[in-house]
Image (cartoon, rainbow, N blue to C red):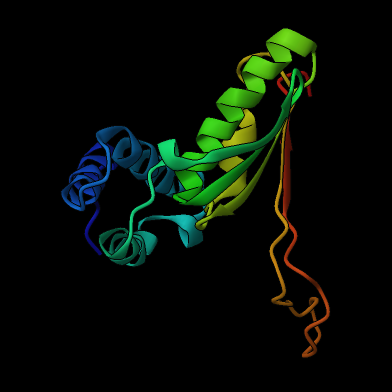
Length: 167
């Protein structure tokens, strides 16, 4: 099996995403996320997703800038992503939450109508690096998973990820 250095893989992914016509910043965010998933040991959320993401971007690309703020107060913002890329949307939402924390000691951002957000574990450490507790929840929808050892689908896929540098 060939070995590709992470910086070269990130650059290749960036160029492929950029070629779809998405903004360079978005291409960088998505490329970094996918390659970092491999580096964190989560190949299931890595670059093998690239072909499907590219097909989706070529079909229809909704930019983050098209999102709509549905509700806002000093510590909360609820956003309709209108189909924006999930990785970009959660990255931006984490930034917004950080700004809310600086103003109000607490920051919450709710997102809806975005594409696949990929690996949840990527986002809380970014928040924790700023001296805050980062938490990400996902309402995975109607597909059910089988509990370990069972053939029956009984569990909803509702992942949670949290991180603090104090732990």
